Image 1 (cartoon, helix red, strand yellow):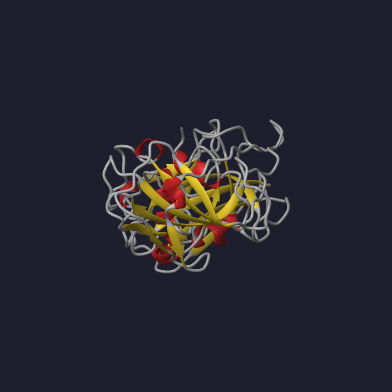
Image 2 (tube, helix red, strand yellow; image 1 turned 90 degrees about the vertical axis):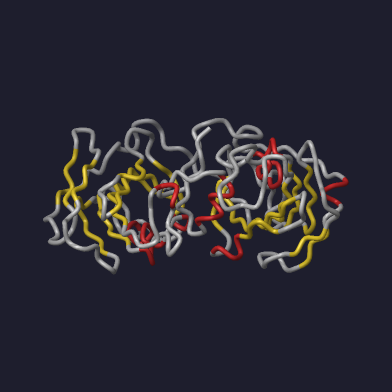
Length: 335
């Protein structure tokens, strides 16, 4: 099962959802079967005494408090919809927004809240999630507040992300605030999307990293020996003649991410399938690189921490709090 990447604007939420960090630049769609059913379907998760015994206070999409009698332990995930929304049911494969607050079922202590980490993230409900979260949100109406109590087997097991006050035997109590469901866009037919940018070559921009391309289009980035820029920089390497990428679009791209100081490639889609994602679901600098560009273009963007992962970085990917990132992005399609 592919792991959920960590380039959401709310980076830590992705870490919670996926269980570990791979530092991909975008929340890519999973290529494996969904954890709880086929795309476009959902299965109701039963409520139970554990989830019904959790009292939640606070408005939706604000930080909640959860009161329950600890220790609370379950062997199967239970889900109670505390505040039903009025939207369509959330199916496997749908995109939505999510705020998540987690509590240790054994101690009752809060262990994480996305409200403290930048707020709700755009997510796709599929097998990239830990299975207990899928069970918590699938078939719930959009706009709902949900309580899910999940056993270790449906959470992280013995692979709990570092920094969370949990053990491999703790059940987890989740308060999930979900937005409206957006069904997945139709997958382009094979061969209808090029495998690499096909726009016209543009003159090099002074001071930028240089890029050489393999026959299949995979880039090799050479970083200058100068200090990293402190502001975002963007240059067009190939200019496509396709449609302009609008704000909030879903796009198909190839990408490679490199750390300025070391030249290390920390993630790329090359060697895998092109990535599909909403530009609202990525770090600010990556979005700025894509919106307003034309399909068929290749761009290079230099992203300082303020437009990337901020002061936390992504330690599991070797990205520190002061690291500037370089992405080469081939914009292949909209949708």
